[in-house]
Length: 178
Image (cartoon, rainbow, N blue to C red; front, side):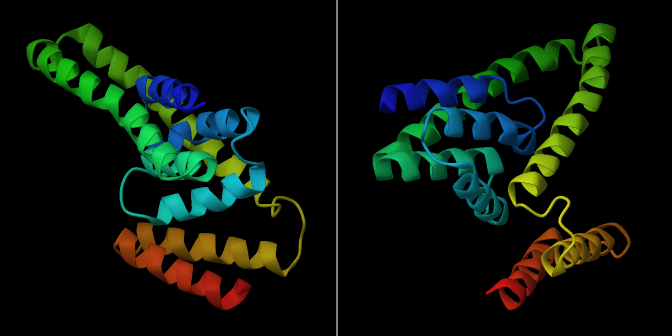
């Protein structure tokens, strides 16, 4: 079972294009389909992983591993998730230094931008749907949207530091939902 977890997260680590948020749907699918946790637990873990320091995909992998197999599962998941990045960054760094201005390389990176944006949007959509706030118009949905709008305005218009926005949003969540 630990070997399956290591291989699963290693494969996810190898295909992690666009950063951690774009891999959230992949991790969710694997964790739920393999019976490591249910959707509600996963949704709760994403909230904690996103508010924790470090990459969300790695944080999520560690939390899934811990939930399924304790400290050993957390370590196996972390190694599986980060080993591909280490190997690929070393190889990519060597190749990129040599070919960074090649038209094919520049075109490939330009072509990856839309799929990365789509994967991040899909992760946000899945988080919204899993939380049960999608189409029910009640005080939780309204407050959810208000927190979202306030955070977005603070980030985009007033350039508030993301850590401050995360902290305030978490405190508002505690005040509203505890």
